[in-house]
Length: 427
Image 1 (cartoon, rainbow, N blue to C red):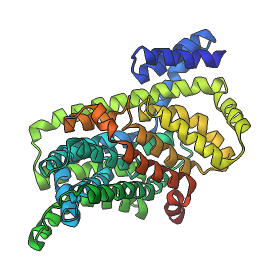
Image 2 (image 1 turned 90 degrees about the vertical axis):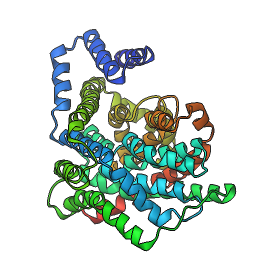
Image 3 (image 1 turned 120 degrees about the vertical axis):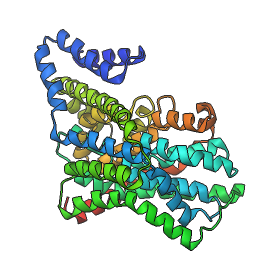
Image 4 (image 1 turned 180 degrees about the horizontal axis):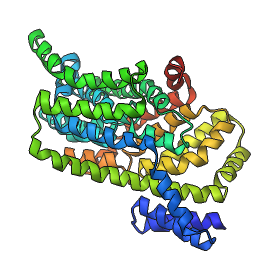
């Protein structure tokens, strides 16, 4: 009965159009009043949820990604990708995916990736004969890689949702090969469609021009080397890497490239502050929500329920994938991670699934949800940039869903894809 009050209240507030963070917070307070738990205890849990040293990484990486996005790094990465892939049939679509891969290693955000790469690539693809819908679909699907590859913000949130029991560095390393596999799945689909629809090829970039483009882009690419190299070498931790990335992004944008005006910097910081504030509110209220679930023993009840359905790990993973894919279409990624992890992780551990592996499964599932209606923030951003409707995009997304689900199945049922690199590095 108590659990029903918590969940039903939360759903009612959600259906009334209330933001997820407020719905979780109010549902927690209503349930606490009903079962006579002091509100002071709830407030302390909400405060504790935001009082975590690891959370410093989120604002730093968000700021670094925003600076690199608006400072011309995205355009330079696109130009570099054209050197290697532009001359292939359908090359601009491949450039789009490759640029998303590279920029995802800087931004850690699917929405930021879509905004930065889409603003450059969608108009370019349309000018070269691609349809607006196809260009938009390639952009939003390619941007999901940013959810997986380091420095993924959502990997940090997953680590926090596990109570800190899963290392952020391990999650960063675990996301490398699933992210690349996901990108290759999109590339394979693009190549098939390019052959079928006779997509155009761009010009071959002369060697002298290619060298100049590469030298211009190398400053942005060094961000990836600094972040991963510093973590792997032990020079700084995954949390400290956020501060290093932020300082280097500022230096690269304001001193080296100088494409961004100093007078615009306060506006950028203001936008980043609003974004981080929203994320922190979700994390704080989710901590209170999770506290209520723990009091009601919802995680243990969920574990017993799922284990009563089947004791086959592979069947359970299939059910979990279906459930996460459906839930991901109705709620944003961060609150889904914070709500589902305490419930599902005990089940996965009981089945013998590594928590790092399950993290990759969850991130990929919910990443696909970001581009799935009715609630798909990356889908909305892509449609706005591509100047197309959500209905037009959704009708032609099915082949991309097939490619993405193929990658999801491989990541789900071949744990080594996620675990080989972190285990080799002793994380």
